[in-house]
Image (cartoon, rainbow, N blue to C red; front, side, top):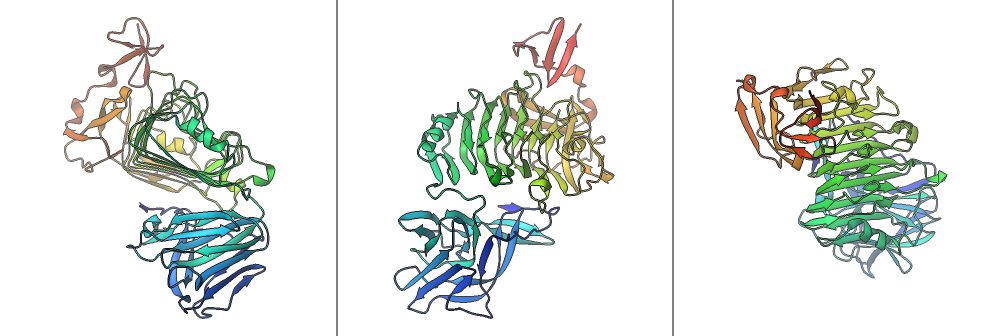
Length: 532
């Protein structure tokens, strides 16, 4: 999957004083062994297949990566005549940068074992990489394997076929996971209560090193929050989750010790629908995590009676990079305002958790409706900082934030130092009116928006198929907003009814739909209206 980060400079992954890294230099060739202050690599190569050569490759994440210029090629599958052993001097974390180098190799796994314990056993594929724009060129960035280890030998095996290793890194102490901690990988059938299923799995593994939840197309529920302090990935495969039974956040991060402050975790949602969210989607729980959060091809329905922010870091850590791609996020207009889109108020700033970090929010190819209606979109621990950047591209944004101030609201309603704006091809509406002109300039930067008025089929029920009316000569992309919805384009924007004329669906303050309003206060199209 291609990710473009033109506003975020490449950051080499820092090696602290307690870290040792083994890399490979083609000019030195294959050594007898590699030893970096007690972190040692030895090998058996009876058939002379292991070799070192020059090869450029990036490893890390789309936001933080490092380039290597040499690799260790195993030349075949592991066995008695071909294998690698790592020796670590103490407990800590082992990081392995490895790829196959072959698009057709889809069954080659890397296996890390220590004593009788399997630390890692998964297939490595070229498709695991993400494409990142670096200047004017796209490069693949491959993920890094990361596992907790104890002092002693670790066997590195590749039982199916040859692999290419670019680096082995050992980090002593720090934010390590107990040696008995293993990842939790759940594949759940439709009808399952996700929160309960995970809670059962965590009874025998209370501090997992990572959580992966795979669902099938179908209906699920959840009545318990996901409470963990590790990477969390939910692959929905089209699943629909009813979260209305929750009395807490959907994801609530676990407590940290003081030594763990600044712990980095990745939270990923992919190809799912979550509706009836009464509290936060993600709550940092006033803990000092530094998160990367990505939501792709997903729908999130907020039923915000609890008035909590969707992404809530209040009083705790922060989200370094928030990526929303191909999603719909909407709040129920029949319920008094949801509690905001993002907050890190009274929290740590990103640079206070990691002084080398940047902070970005990227929203692309997405539909946002009634999020923080008539309120500031974001509440930030520190706003208007040079390390913050904002990307909003090809989105439909209706009744979000204060009128004409959605973009400014991303920066907590401030205009200041932040000049890192990449905004293009969006439609902005408020109460049935086109407000593209009001969103045209922020922090002195002129932005490119599309003037038009959007009418959704039935947003109250989560149906965001839409018609967009534009003036003659206005160009609209083949798809704008969340691409799953059907787009109809008509011309004649002057014929669009005003907001006062187009209130087709009405609710009283108890959320009950009424066919004909009488005297009183009602909600229609996400707006409170007084009928006299």
